[in-house]
Length: 314
Image (cartoon, rainbow, N blue to C red; front, side, top):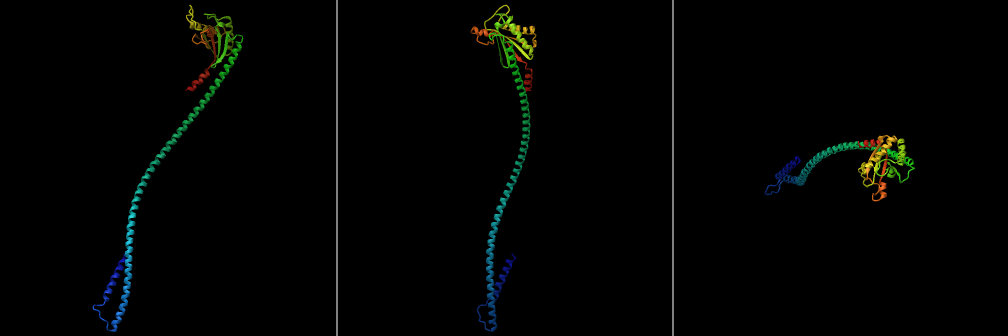
């Protein structure tokens, strides 16, 4: 700005100087040598001054042009600066919002991670508990399987022993079979009783004696005696129906085992089934003959098995 002011002052002084040396009107021809010399040197100075003035004027024009361009550039840059400032402010606000959102999401992430870790710990603990429970169940199952295998072995051995003990009797008199983990000794009506009677016949007593010997040697065997009849009704002074007859026949076997052959009464149980559990059809004589029977069911004691099952329920 100082240079511009100095330049303007210089141009003004130059114009003033030219104004002082301009010839007076009307024009007068120099007469003396001194006037001619003065005009000569004055002309040279004027030309030099005019040349300087023109140069300075060119500088002023160039300066004005440059100043105008600089003004345009300044206004453009100022507008651009304002635009960029607004964008910067907007980006700063968005950045602050994003920072806040990031902080919130990071807090939620940390909370979820903590929760996931807690859940994972709980899951691992629960999984360990379940694994321990499964291991315990597998152990109890193995124990149960061992007991069942032992029971099956006992039943198989008992089945063989009973068959050998009763080998002297015919198949139409008695049968021995194993099913449902038990040994079933089925004695026909003609081997044990007369029609309508609960008194055991001699040959039947012999069969009961053989069986009692087996029971006394194998004390861990429970005995259930079931009396069965056909469906032909009976009505006597002693037996009003087949149910009463079947119960009395079962009781006769129980007393024979306990009284005569000293089988522990606590091991014995009697039940009358009447005609309600037929083995074959009652529509023909052969079927009715098969249904008139007494079944002695031998079961290994299951106390240990029942205790284990009860333990598994807890």
